[in-house]
Length: 479
Image (cartoon, rainbow, N blue to C red; front, side, top):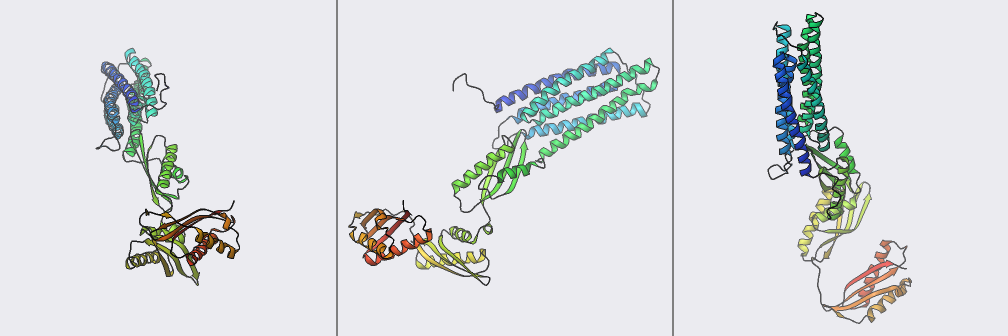
C-alpha cells in the first residue's frame, strides 16, 4: 500500500486506547485544579456548599485516577486468563465511582443537618472569590463533560461515561451552590437571617442530585457486570439470525458486554440433509446478520441439526440410517387403518458378512420403530456398497454383443432411442465384462420411469450377454 493510502474509517485498538487515555488524563488534571481551588475558597469562606463541592471534586479526582487506570486495563487484549478481554474493568470502575459519590452524600447530609437542625453556627463569607471559583468550576466541568461524553459514546466506554456523568453532576451541584451563595449575600443585604440557611439547603440539594445520578449510574454498571442486555436486543438478534436462508429456527441467544466489546453466542437449527460446508456457510451468514444489529460484535454461531420429529417420515428414515453409517433409498410407506409399514433398500458395507449386515439392519429397524410412531412392519432389502473406491486394471473388450442386446431391447420397447446411446465403454476386468454408457430419453419422462427402464435394460443385458459384471447406465434428457 502506498504512503498516501486513505486511513481506515474504523480506529484500531491502539488508536482508541490513545484517545481514551488522553481524555482521561486531561480530566484528572482538571479534577486536581478544581479540588484545590474549591477547598481553598471553601475553608476561607466557611461555605458548606463550596466545601461539599470540594469533597465532591476530591472524590472526582480519585474517580478520575481510577478511570485512567481502568481505561488502561480495558485496552489490554484478551489472553489465556481473560478470554473475553479486560473490558469489565471499566464497569468495575464505574461501580466504584458510584460508591464514592454515595459516601460524599452521607457526609454532606450529616453536615447540613447539623447546621440546619442542631444549632451548629458557622459564619459563611459570600465574597467574589467564592463566586469566582464556583463559576470557574461550572465552565471547566462543562468543557470536560462534553469531551468525555464524546469519547465515551465513540468507543462505548462506561468508565469515561461515568467520569462524564461526574462532571455533569458537578455542573448541577455548582449551580445549586451558586444559588446558596446568592442567598447568603442577600441575607446580609436585606436583613433576612433565614436566607443564611440557603448555603446548607444548597448542600442538601447537591446531595439529592448526586444520590439520584449515582443510583442511576450504579444500576447501569451493575447490570453490565451481571451481563444484562436491553430487553428487546435478544429478540432483534434472534430475528436477524432467523431470517437467514437455511435457518429453520433459533433456539438460543446469549449476549454479554465487556467494556466496549459485545459478545453474542447464537445456536440455530438447520436441516439434517445439508452438507457440513453448507451449514458453515449458513452460520457465517447468520453471524453477519447479527453484526447488522450489533455492529462490531464478536459473534459465535453454532449450527445444529433440526429435531428428528420436525422432518417428514422419508427424511427421518434416511437420517436414522445415516446415524448407523447406512444408506436408505427406494423408501415406500404404506398406510391402512391407522397402521403403517415400510419397505426400503438398505445399503450396507460390502465387507460385512450376512450375519453382521443383518445385525445392523435389525438395529436400524428398531431405531425406526422407536422414532416413527405406528410402524407395524419393516422390510429392508440389503444392498452391498463398496467401502473404498476400487482401482481395477481393465482392457478394452468387443462391444458387439452389448450393442446388439441394447438394440433388441429398444426395438421391443418401441422407444426408438437406440441411436441416442453415446460414451459407450466396454472393458474386460477381473474376468468379467464391465459396461457403462449414456442413454438419452424423453425429457418429459419421470425419473421413476427412467429408473425402471434402466433396471429392465440391465436385466435384458445380463440375460443376453454371458459373464456380464458391472453395468452403469447414465440417463439424460434427449436434446
